[in-house]
Image (cartoon, rainbow, N blue to C red; front, top):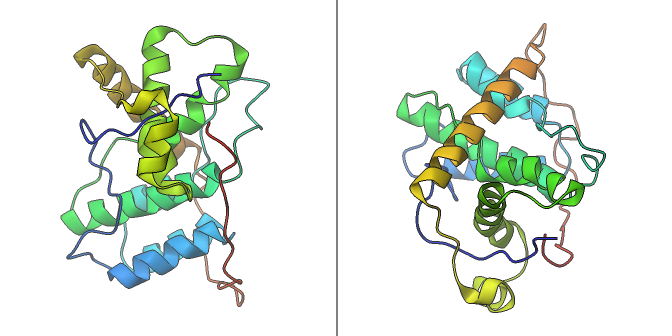
Length: 213
C-alpha cells in the first residue's frame, strides 16, 4: 500500500545526509560510529562514547531512545533496514547539533517513516498523512538502499518528487517534534556511562532493500 515514493531536492528539514565539516568529532569517527550501529552495536554503547566526549544528556538520550511507533498490530513489521537507518540518522543529527552548539527538537525523516509505515497497513491514510509518508520515503529510501537515485525515480511515482504544501509541512514539523519529545522521555537514563564492549567492531554486514516500502 502506498508504494509510490520519489526523491525530492526541496523542503528538507535540517537533517544531515553525510557528516558536515568542522564536527566536534571527526568525519571518519562519525562514519565509524554509524557503521557500528548498522552492524548491530547497541546505540547505548555509541551514546556512552558521545557522553564521554562531552555530549549533553539530551543528545545522548535522543540517540539511544526507542523508535516511536503507533499503536498498531503492524508495529513489529518494519523493514529490517529501517531500524539501523533511524539510529544512524539520529547519530548524524546529534553530532551536527552538538558541533553547532544547539539542541534540536525535530526527529529525522527516517523516524517519520518508521512511525507512519505500520499505519499504512491498518487502513488507508488520510491524504495529508499519506503525503507525509511519501515525502519521508523519498528522503530516506534512496539513501539507505542499494538502488541508485536514477533507477529509483524511474520506478516510483512517475519520477515526480513529492512536494509538501505549507499545511503539510506544518503537520510534518509537529509530528517530528512529537516523536523526538517522546523518544527523549522514553529513554532510560543509565546509572553509569555505557562502556564499549570488546567486540564493538563486528564483521561488516550489508543489508539490502526488498522492493520499495
